[in-house]
Picture (cartoon, rainbow, N blue to C red):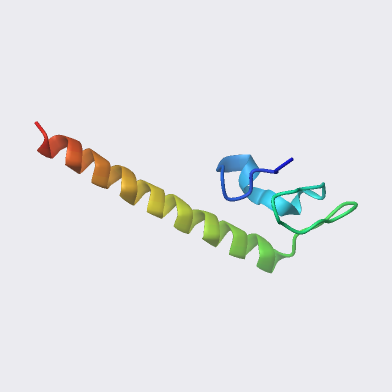
Length: 69
């Protein structure tokens, strides 16, 4: 079972820090896991960059559709 890391956004974005089993190639952690501030910041920055890339792709698609009119 995959946790959804790198394939979903929002709550599941936090991926392999959930402390459970994940068979999608991520790390395995047993028991509770607490993020450090540095890890939180790095994860949020990664997520923000992903959102920016997705927004850019949507903007490009909208521009393509407008050109087809």
